[in-house]
Amino acid sequence: MTQENPITPSTELVQQWVDTYFGGKISQSNFHLDLATRAAQWGADQELKACCDWLSVPCPSYGRELRNARRPKPPSLKEQALQALSHLLDGAAHSMDTTEPADYIRRALEQLDD
Image (cartoon, rainbow, N blue to C red; front, top):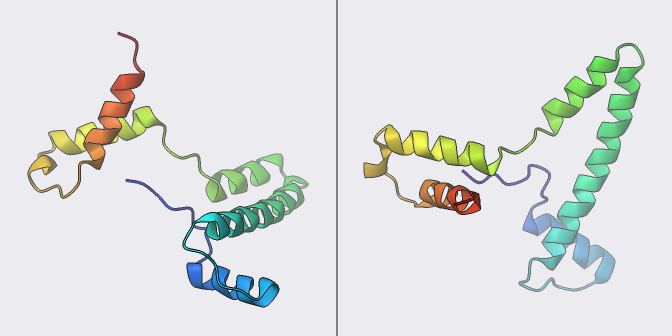
């Protein structure tokens, strides 16, 4: 149920950038990948903003629709828990290889007041 950001560059691409610009190997930490991901996201967000601004001139809703399509909001913890619960209620618990749905339910329930 987790979703990786589609703008995340591959580890190999980050390694090429490090080799080209810094002349060295990246460590096994995720620092370089995280930095590259944030840079890619920032660049993509700048392009998206420019496209939305351009589309908003003829019709303001065009820019909003494009932004919503390209940057959908991730489901809330409550939505994830409800999806997980529905999955469990459908009888999928017998064939599940992961406890991820149960973790969503547990985390959501932990946030509720007693």
